[in-house]
Length: 378
Image (cartoon, one colour):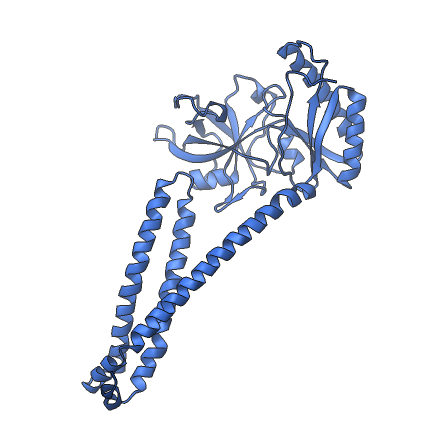
């Protein structure tokens, strides 16, 4: 049978443990079926499919959305009104998801404050959203976000080439949910904004099923139910978390480990180079150190002068290198400045420590040499 001209496609992604995902697709006879008629047929077929699957003994929850936890992301910028009448707080990176009924219940994500979406929030005129805990922590200083307003300030992904109007309506935050824990960033769980969706507004539609027992056994049962509901209904990509984790996380882990290995090797070679340079630099000043000791300089004063020069030399190099890195970081919109700043601070401390340690052994060795012997060298 030919595919309808209004296909409902669902991309790949990961879901929480104990859950499965499937891609419902209705096919037709290839005729000129109006979009409204197809939408009605799809809604009717999907609702029956969901009802039948929910009746299976191993199913503890079922929902849908335009993406499930762990799937590909949609990011927009926004602004939130932390205090009525005050200037809005800019939200440079907000992760967006449109969720269907029982979404948070299905994935065992409790409400922390406020309320969940109800049927009225799914009307086209509704202006309500939910956020997660990390949104409140990152953009509101951890205060309760319920009752505050936000609005998007960037074009939708499908309107990437359109002008940014900045005039989208204000949305009220009616609830806050716990972080799901499936999409971590360097600052914890991603800051999410959730919109209420229906089968007609979610693009695409992704079904999520939370189960107990063997996902493989359920996948066969789900396919059989789909054929029984409608011979024109096809389910593709019925998958479990374990399969998705193996496919997505393992390559990502290998790639990340490779990058970490290369960076670690570079850091080690840099530290070894600094150690060797400072060690040789101090060793070549043995005659100078002996002369100063002969003229009455105390060991403490000599060591202080050696370390002062080392700090100036290493510090100036580290400062110049960090300035160059930060220049390019602040020019990049995608760079995470806080993470880079923290990394540079740790790297700078490591290089400075290695350089100072390199001065210790040759300096102590030089101080042990008799002044008369040191004056004979060179």
